[in-house]
Amino acid sequence: MSDSEANHPSGAGDPPGTGGLPGLDLDRLAGHLRLHGLARGPLTAEMIVGGKSNLTYVVRDGDATFVVRRPPLGHVLATAHDMGREFRVMSALQDTPVPVPRTFHLCQDPEVVGAPFYVMEHVEGGQPPVTSDLAHRLVDVLAALHSISPESVGLGDFGRPAGFIERQVSRWKRQLDASRSRDIPGIDDLFARLSQSIPESGEPAIVHGDFKFGNTLVSGGEVKAVLDWEMSTLGDPLTDLALFLLYADFNQLDNDAAGEPLDTADLAARYAQASGRDISRLGWYVGLACFKLAVIAEGIHFRFTQGLTVGDGFAEVGEQVAPLVARGLMEV
Image (cartoon, rainbow, N blue to C red; front, side):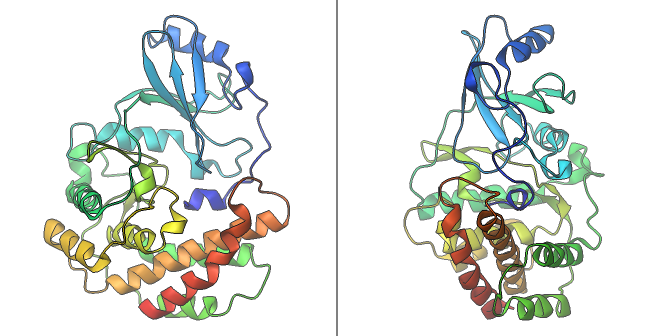
């Protein structure tokens, strides 16, 4: 679950593309890619299913295989699906300790396939059952990401780290107020506790924004790529850590996180050692993560009850709100 899921309805928008693929006209795409030396023959494609955010396609021209990514159909907030943002951060992280796909081309012209899109490397991998060893590897990747100086990779202006967590708290309160449709016991108390005890942030870092097992590709026990950078920015890195740990505890929120139970205290300690960061206020950040995911889930529930969101799993999302609020109140 990502916060971009809170910002668009599903099922309306662009017409289907050539070959029945929603949002991807293969003839127009082929012509564009030939102009840029990225494809030769006719294209075939398949959509990667399972995500509820940006649309991702595996595209082949007979010789090469690559990935095309574009915003969801009928998306509402362009800022939540900024192709240039994803392309920029992944391009910047090439040849760093953070594994990301190679980026090849960004097209900001919506006339080609109906929306801006970018082309990146197709990385072989999947999501095996979660193990402690894999969780340790992901924590190491997260610590490596947060250790990269934004200026050293050309991302010094990638966000506004000053006041980052204050804005996060107020942002999710606004989102909650926009999607209230029922009484949610404790959620206003959780907001009040968060807003009254905001910690002082440490050194800002490149923040992924939705770091979880389901946003990675793994092969042979190695993390081959971190994906889905649409919410990345500069900010407080402990927001990434807290969200990752919360997903580990609430693995129903991350469909790709099924596996053995994880020792989140051990994972947090490993991150602290690898990053050198102070995690003494981590409970507050976990509380914020609970508030964020509860608000996202409530927004999805509201749109589902209005018939604006369709698809597998949406009917049960509303049941996740109360446990998240209860966990948040325990943490803050």
